[in-house]
Image 1 (tube, rainbow, N blue to C red):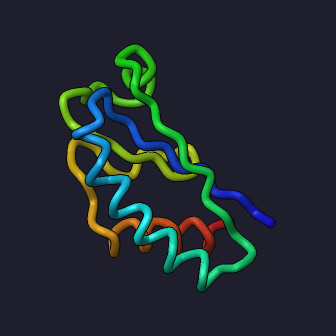
Image 2: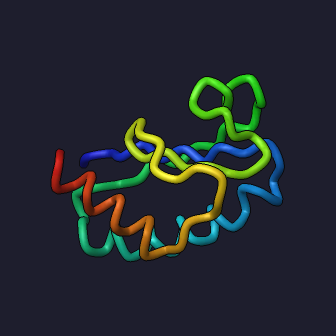
Length: 91
């Protein structure tokens, strides 16, 4: 089983929730299509930790496999799926 780390960056729960919702939907589709992969999702909520990855703290961000893929907004399910597919192709 291969694991793809996914990190949601945001210090307020209200910022992280839309990303969680889209990510959960994308995860369901992705893991059905790629049964050998699992997502390891974590949240970074500390302002100090967020600043290690991006200077944008007022809005949420998303990292996939250690790469910052979305900054300052909540991505849609299809965007997350595209980033996950790209990660599989480059693995």
